View 1 (cartoon, rainbow, N blue to C red):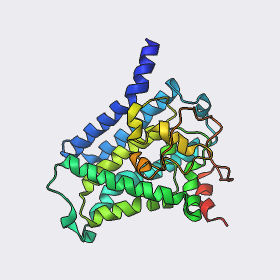
View 2: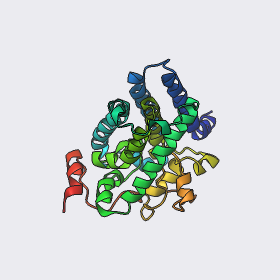
View 3: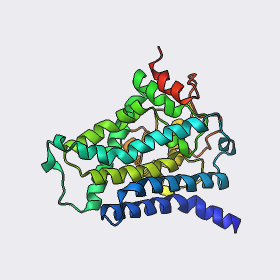
View 4: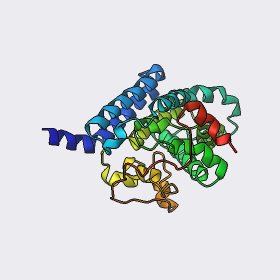
Amino acid sequence: MSILFKTALRYLLYPLSMLFTLYITLLILNKSMPYWPTAILLILASGAVIALAERYLPYQVDWLESHQDTLTDIIHAIFNLILIVSVAYFIEYLNIFRFFPRLWPDQLAWYWQLLIVGLVIDFGLWLMHYMSHKYKFLWKLHAIHHQSSRLYWLNAEKRHPLSALILAGPSLIVLTLCGAPSQLIAGWMMLMAVHLFFQHANVDYRAGIFKYIFAVAEVHRLHHKHGFGRKNFGEVFIFWDILFKTFYYETNKVAANKVGVRSPIPNQYIGQLKWPFNP
C-alpha cells in the first residue's frame, strides 16, 4: 500500500492540486466564492500539503533540514504573498490608466481571457527573469532567490521586493493599459503562487510529458543547479525556454550540495534586503 500511495503521490499530486486550484479560481471568477480570504487560505493550504509531501516523498533528504534559512524564508513568503493577493486591489485603483481598453478581448469566454492574462504575465516574467541573469544589478537583486543551498517549497516566494516588482511590473503594466479585468489577473496570480510552491518543492514528483509545457520542479531544479543558471527561466510555462533555446533537461539527479550561489549573501532578512546595494 505504501508503494502504491507513493506512486500515486508522485504522479497525481501536482496535476490534481493544480486542477483543484483552477476549480477554485472558476468559483471566484463566477462570484460563487469571495476572492478574500479564499485566495490566501488556498495558498496556505497548498503550502501545508506540499510541506507534508516533502516529508513523505523527499527529492533530497538533506534539503529537509534547515540551512539557517527557514525564518528568513518565512518572512520573505509573508511579504511576497501579501503582494500577490493584493495585486487585484492595486489594479482596481489604476483604472484611470487603462488607456487602450478596446484592445482587451472581453467578448471571449473568461477562461480564454484568463489564458491570455497568464501568457502575458508569464512571458513578461520569463523575459525579466532572463534579464535578471544577464545584468549585474538585476542579478544582485535576483541572487537573493538563489541564495539558499537547498530547494523546498518556501523558496518560491524568496525574492527581494524590488526584484519582485521588476519581474512582474512590465507585464502587469501592459495588462492594466489594455484593460484586463483585475479579477482575472488576481486569479492567475493565485494559480501561479500554488504552481511556484510545486516548482521549488523538495518532492520527488513527476510530470511526464507536461514538463515540456509547464515549468515544474523536474526542469526548474536545473535552473538552480551550479553552472546552469541561464537555463529554464520559465515561471509557469517552460515552452518560452524551448522557443528561445534556453531549455535544458537531464535525467541525472541534482546533487544536494549543487544548488545556491557562491556569493556571501547574509542569511538574515534585513541583510538580504541590503546586500544588492553593497558595492
